[in-house]
Structure formats: structure tokens, C-alpha cells
Image 1 (cartoon, one colour):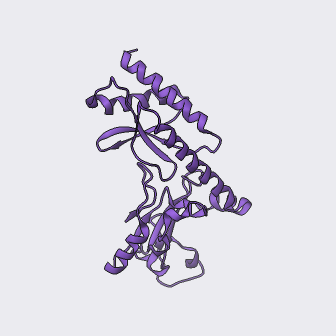
Image 2: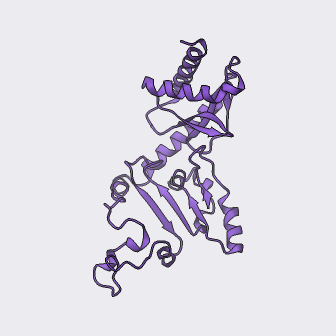
Image 3: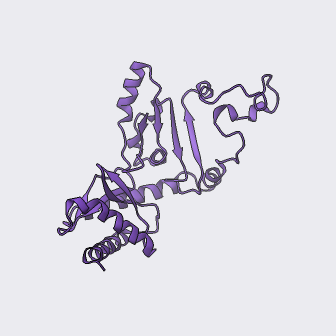
Length: 246
């Protein structure tokens, strides 16, 4: 399995190279593109998914980067017939041995949910009304905003950059000089908790190399880089309060 936008930092594997290896070894290649496969709708960013057409299967969560209400997950197979291999089972109360007029609409052999609402409707309605451009515009803006935030952090000596963002996820740490290394992880967690309690910003945390980091996912297309400056000010304010014991 390869990743197209990991949950922690939004990293992308070299899909094209992995596809060559799996083809030579006759290995099924699945792409976890729950977060990042939505970049396919952007002509500007889809190069990060080079080679995905060679994968045997991949998954895409439209309720992430395509900004839809959850849940709206799409699972793609390169070979339609092989899509039956993972979930088909012998259950006489569900599956018909003799095909009839209804079996052509039965998707239970291709997933693990026999009863569900049509998850695709949320995406289909917006796509039918606006096409792919509205999704591409939002994705491109938020990825560019993430790069701008990354450049800001590069010039802030009291912040530590964890990675160079590849999508709309940015992870970093607040590292003022008077916080010792053994307290750094708990310090990030305490800052995250205070920020969420304040209700002005929402950020998450993730462990990287065993140390907590602050994690920002840019999802709202109505924000701008000034909001990120405000977040950094809030982090500093809360960090200093924690250090002083107030």
C-alpha cells in the first residue's frame, strides 16, 4: 500500500516508482488517497499523484479535501472484475445465485455495507451544478496558503518546522528558549488543549518521532494568511502563560 497524503503530515509516496516495482513482483498496489487523492481534480497539483492510474485500487474521501459533509468515500478499481474479490461471500440471505432484474443494482459484493444511503449523492449534486473547477480552486488556494504559512515559520526563530508541506497539512512546534527538551512534548499538548478550550482556533496534534507537534489543516477557503499570524500570536501568548504558571 502507498500513501497519497498521509494523515499525520500529508506526505505523498512516489506512486509511479512503486507501481513499477509492484508490477514486476505481481503485487496488488492499493493507494490510500483518503486525504490527497482529491488533488486529481486540480491540473496544477495532480502531478503529486503521478502513476496513480497504474494502481490496482485507490480510495478517496470527498468529505476531506473536496469539502463535503461526511461520509463520502469513493473506492476505485483498475480492473472491474477484480473488485469482487475482497468482499464476496456465501450468504444466501443477501446474494442471489441466479441473477435477476435486481442484482444489477446490488453492490453488496463489492463493499462491506449491505444497507446504506447513496454516499455519492453529496458529490454528484455539486459536481453536476459546478463541475470540477470549484473544487480545484479551493484545493489550490488552501495548498498555496499552507506554503505561505510554511515560509512564515522559516523566519520565526521560536518555532520549529517539522516538514515541508505537500498538501494542506502543516506540523510544527513552539520552542521558546526556556522550555527544556524533556518537557517539549507535553508543552505542545498543553498549548493545543488551551487553544481548543479558547474556541478561537481549532488545531490538532500529532506525534512525530515520539514528540508531540502542533498540526494545522487548512480547510476553510475564507481564511487568509493574517489568520495564521493571529494563530502564532495566540500560541506565543498561551505558551508564555504556561511557562509563567498563570
